[in-house]
Length: 370
Ligand code: FA5
Image (cartoon, rainbow, N blue to C red; front, side):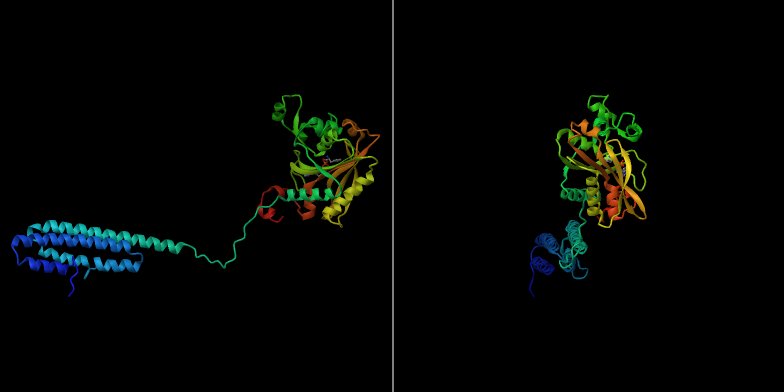
């Protein structure tokens, strides 16, 4: 039989040997051996539980140290019998402490192993052969896309892009466009006047407003450019219009202006027809209706045919001589045409959108189609 150091068999052997010596020596050895064996058991058990990484390893350690029938703790407990009577209370107390320590080591290891197993189970299995999830990439708003396309078409017709501010003074929005003070278009109820913007300029007598048309850019360009001029200007304009399927309080216009020698109404109509068939398709029907704008003479309104009815998409005409004079051009030398088209209305016809409000509802299901 091989005796393991610190085993209970070893202890019993030690006790048996001690019984050959003096009584006091036997007593002393019984207690000290018992305590030494408890210490060794504690160290072994703590090490075994700390080393256990799997439920099986933990179970093996539990059976070895805490097993009800043949566990080492049970084995050592038998050595309590060889401890002298007067030292039994202290030995029993120490035994209970050791039992507690080993049970704690066991519970700590069990919790650690269970947690590791649970986290392994909840981790998704990575399968490199699965197709990736498509990313929802953002895209440009349909009106922004339309603006880019309109610039492209007009660029091919020889027009370059000009820009102007959205907050305007009355000179550029009305006066230089031949719109007199008493014209209904200047009514405060027909415009978004900005009292704060006027105050910021330091001139309360010079009202500022959100521009109601891109025709303001015609004036700004002609003020600082000698003829010939061939520009477009695209951007937001604002009007307190009642909202319906074709009207919104903020919308976009594309302004066009061509000033040169011998420009005629025929040029205007050809450019607009060319533009309409390029953007809306060769089969589009457009018509010009006589109309009135203070800054063009003669003036027309342009309609396209769609869904069994005519819909207006812009205004146009020959630049009024008064406007040419207001910017320092000589109406005897040059003539010009101008137009202002509703970008939303063009985009609606092109993409079969029947309600202008769709553009500004911010519904990604709608926006994602463009
Ligand atoms: C004008 O704004 C003129 N400045 C156009 C012009 C320019 C005429 C140069 C002559 C020379 P009108 O108010 O008709 O015109 O507006 C032009 C287009 O803007 C309309 O045909 C329409 O397509 C669009 N529009 C007008 N109001 C709204 C609105 N509330 N919502 C959406 N689109 C609108």
